[in-house]
Image (cartoon, rainbow, N blue to C red; front, side, top):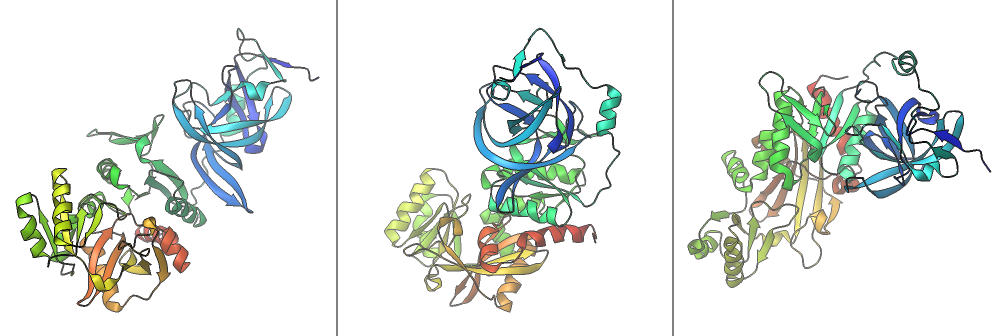
Length: 455
């Protein structure tokens, strides 16, 4: 049987494999799992296995001292905090040293900025090895200030690349993972910034953006906004605040905001001479028949102004169905568009990906049998297709009219020529990269480099 080590309620420990020479831990037999403070947590693949990279600020209230770590991923687990908050966390294993004793422990990774300790040592890690004397602290000693400086004050590392933030909601999405990977592969310091964890300080002299736990985000070179529709208002407000701080935003807040307003975006496109399917907009049930007649009768498409990824888009095949759908939407006080149905498109459309005024890839999206919407998110399939010079011209013109550096432009082929359906300010990468084998995420990073004349 192992001799158990007696420890106090607080102790210093280390993780040699992670390069953490000293970190203060709260020894808590009331907590089942152990937790390690981590930020910028990004999963990745290494030699066919799942790994995770993360940054640690080992000293409380010190965000300048950063240790860049990576470890093999053991699990993803829902952990309930002492306050009752449930959070999905990545789990790793690492060798820890407490005093002269070393053993392997399981650790969940989470942002502990708001906690008193960078680490929590739970009972699973203590079992069979440790006895806790809750009246004592630092039974095994603690490092001096000079020793901590020796461990961590190695001077500022020279900046290798740009500091780029990806402002989005879900780090697990294919598009977000690819952008993070592409930036790191090109030598930049990439940070995933969760929209809901960002806060703004509005101040005439010292405006700031704070991250969960009090970290200030004012030192970014560039931000890539990838804002889901439900977060448009707050996401655009944050992007606008980054712009006020002179941070380069790949798509501007104004461009994103107007692209999300389907009616306004169509008006902008028409003013730039871009052809669209005949479209009507009204706000009174009394106008229903006139509205249907205006776009050439049934069949027709009815769209919610706030819809996305094919949601809120209905095909009304008869005049009666069109009246029912329009009136149903209006009874919900929803803003709607009605649009002529291009039958000859046969459930197909083109997605042209425009970056910095150039079409970098094109795919044809084809709807499932019996479905008219070709969106990949709805099960549509993607195939490589060559866009015509006219289609490319329309896509570039549309992105320019919307003032978007990055845009997914959807075009439909009709008997009267190519017609523009929609311009997306946060286009997905999975379908187009999978079909074309092109590094679209890398092209987005190159657009940022071009702005900074980065070589």
